[in-house]
Image (cartoon, rainbow, N blue to C red; front, side, top):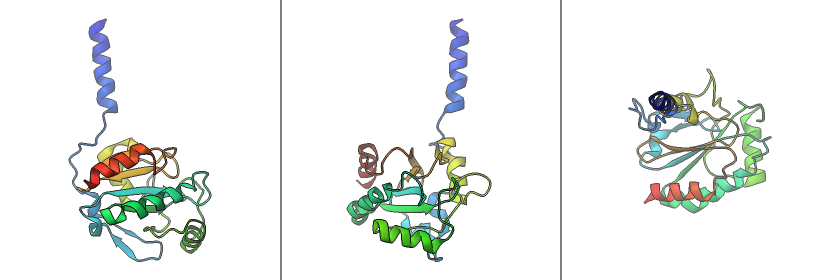
Length: 182
């Protein structure tokens, strides 16, 4: 009975194992994504810097986290942190066009960190960044809801993911960011 238990425990551990130590064929900095104004953001420009990616939505109950994202950007930008907001309608809570999202963010939250165009973050139509994240880090890199966070380290690999409930300025995110900046 004990051997059977150990066998199943081993199987479960393998199944739920984080793939954070995956052999990345590409890294985060190998991708490009369009900005909210239509310009191309070449992520290689962020090489050597940690990046906090957050899928956002204007009509979500977590929208106030924009304030926390801006606070992180203001506090850690000079030390190298990039905060990247990725507006998404994957959960049916985003505006219909990029101009409205941009205006909403600027008027209501004084956002000046980089924002992308409205982008799918899950499923078959997900942007290649999110497909890459899932392939290299597993299901925990797939956003479960708006304001899901993925922290990419200076090497362009996923360091950690955080649920929507976890504020960008939470102690655990700040401690991880500070460790990556040192």
